[in-house]
Image 1: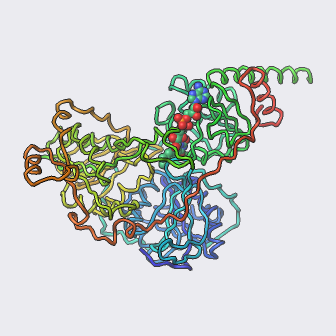
Image 2: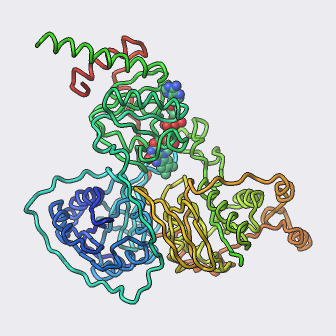
Image 3: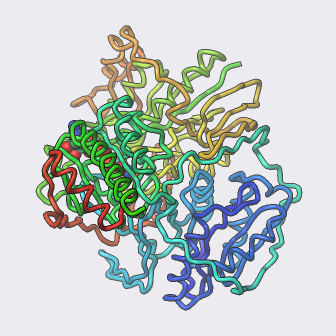
Length: 353
Length: 287
Ligand SMILES: Cc1cc2nc3c(=O)[nH]c(=O)nc-3n(C[C@H](O)[C@H](O)[C@H](O)COP(=O)(O)OP(=O)(O)OC[C@H]3O[C@@H](n4cnc5c(N)ncnc54)[C@H](O)[C@@H]3O)c2cc1C
């Protein structure tokens, strides 16, 4: 653990598996910039890997003031032991006050390992991060400008704000899509700091024998329209309805965690706090009750249509259009109406020609 | 040669059962009204350990931290084939965050000198997936997260296929090791009827009204004694347990006020649906 250090930088972990930056670190730079500006400290990106120096430019373009480049052949592939060793060393040397990680499979392996080594706190799957003051309940001790780590709490419509007043750095993980990716600005530069990596003689515990990467099957973040189904769809077979409606709208398919847990749809499709956060032009929620963890991942959609048999379902609280009814009845009618709509548009076009 | 496996498991509220009955007026969950279950992926961790024992011999010990009611989880483990169940229960462990929890578990696991520690990937009440890797770090064991298939185990080398989200990898490593197990790794075996008959009588000392030494001895003789350890029993330092040991603090809990009622409601008829589609086309949301 490091002591409270008000001059400490804000850091993000620049995950670059396979020599490529994923979206999350760039998204984190957007939020990191905001936090660093409030605290008047620099924003740093920690970039471990092998032959990844070229990526620093992208990190600068997205707002990093400094890139801590840690290159070593043993860092070519991620593993918890080597990466956490390098990052803990950097934390001890530079004493950042905040470290943010993407809640990716790698981030969720690395961040807890670092937290345990540093004996500091870690909050998973934050849906928002802010800076604010905190007064301890018992001692009444006042702490200024802490990282407020905001996430839905288990059960009900509850949002918890977590702080880590003493044992720094303050660390959190954030899912993909939660923070908006800043527009890259060509010409933005920063300081590239080449860090000494002392792994010589260190025996990495895992031998990586084979790796297979596949492209993600769905890109929910990029979809303009999403049709999402929940437990109310009833079965994997019946989820066809969701796919059909999506197909005729050129939309992507999303699901609630219940729909994923029940096996109606693969987990790449999960929308919400522990899935993907989306902001499409249109989100159609079918048979989804709208638990706070689900709403956290979709309530910034430009237009939300809800189809649910229960008029009291919380999902209606974020709806722009709502139909209280059975999705098995409503969706086929929608498909028919959309097809009809196309027909009408075709006629209109034909008339203009 | 056999392997000593320790499975760390958690009793969790059944989040799938959050219905109206379980909700309080203020929109928070009445935990008392929620049934508790064996955290689903911890059952996969248990199954993986039982499969290792079936193939190579050794023992399976299930370790859980929680209130006395968590003895149910230990009995459930025995029904399914575990050899031994240990409960860590101590008021001073309450309000532990994941760091303090992993510290306490590490103190207990060390006493058991395992070859392989298995955890579920994550618990459904928080989904943090933090305790596994943190426990490994505390133990000084390598961690292999997201196990999807145990490919081989020979002498002190294990080979595992792990799911890395956008693909998979095969890794090997030397024992001792900590594994976190995914739901897709296996299908947990059901309870065995004969074991249920026997182990439904298994009890921890704290479940007996006023246990005398004789009673405890009898239970122990019959293999029906569930062990309950306190923080003192595992030599935990209080500074790293419970509230004091937890760097994260709750700053604020807010209930989300649902606004509601401000949407355009349409009837579930052809006309209603046509109006909806018409409006969406008109505002250029679709089409
Ligand atoms: C730590 C944690 C993280 C979580 N992360 C996420 C997450 O990322 N994403 C997520 O979605 N959830 C998440 N959850 C789960 C969340 O709390 C809810 O349990 C889940 O979203 C419920 O899914 P659902 O709305 O599909 O199911 P339910 O709550 O069961 O709702 C089903 C709905 O379908 C309606 N319905 C039933 N039949 C029909 C019909 N024929 N026609 C129309 N409507 C019908 C019902 O009225 C009901 O409203 C998380 C939970 C925890 C504890």
